[in-house]
Length: 128
Image 1 (cartoon, rainbow, N blue to C red):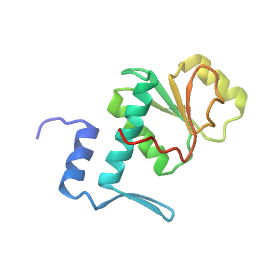
Image 2: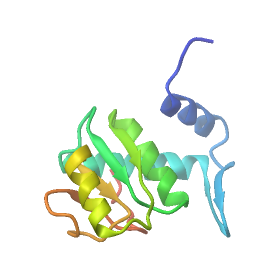
Image 3: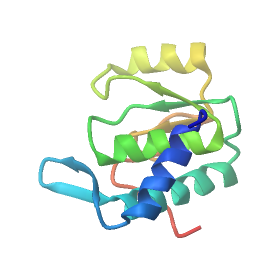
Image 4: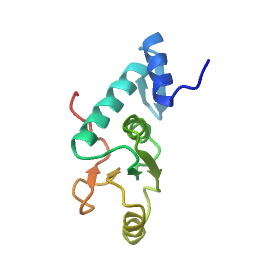
């Protein structure tokens, strides 16, 4: 087997067993098909707002299904997911924004970081 991307591998797994559980976090679970659908929807939503290949997408979400969906969405776009703690003080977040210059930040309230696409926890992108 040749080298394949992580996204391609996830898609193959979803095609083979779409109803198999992909992620469980606490009491919540998503199937392989649901993971692919939600990641694809978020990727399209981010792309429509200007997120592009090789750009940083800061992920400030706590460990959760949303965290993993954000990673998959960034990878689909060819963007670079940048994890940071969801508990950082605002001054540290501001310093990271200045240094990394991400085009989007996942896990923060909408409009909370000026000049960035902000994706709040629990956000569900519309169907692409």
